[in-house]
Image (cartoon, rainbow, N blue to C red; front, top):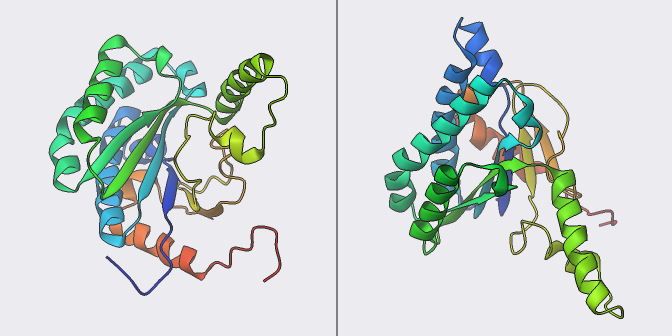
Length: 235
């Protein structure tokens, strides 16, 4: 663990570039997703070493359901395989595993496997690995607003602050990301953590996700350490 620099509590990564990585090599898109699993493992293990307490990954958006069915099916199968393959790594590194998103859209088999791994790792305390699956920021805010409205209807005098609204989001109890990284050169948020990322630091890199490993991740943490976070105030 590095102690001589400012380490973010929560790092979030928009994992982008798997398809391009595969295309550049004349391979099917799914091969890029398979290669990207190694980057997930590398960043998770490096996060534990560096002292990052939360690492979240944008794996599959609500919009991604509109991709070709063959690719969606391959991604879901890869998720199932990864859940099985990474049990040992998670337990050895003391990592708690959580999946957030509209899980009603997942198959019963996948949702059950996720729940099983969440229960298996719930006592791990070194770091929490969050996978956003079937997630969108707009969906999250909308479902939170609906839940909040139901409570206010039952208690019209209830006053809700921005901090109170946090408790209705799927990320309730999880600190907002200090640093959001997007790989592959794209510079947009893509409907991700729209509420939670209000004051996050952003870092965009041209590196495609399957090529984003320990060295690139450490460089991102070094860049974050140089940032002066003022949250709209003057220091």
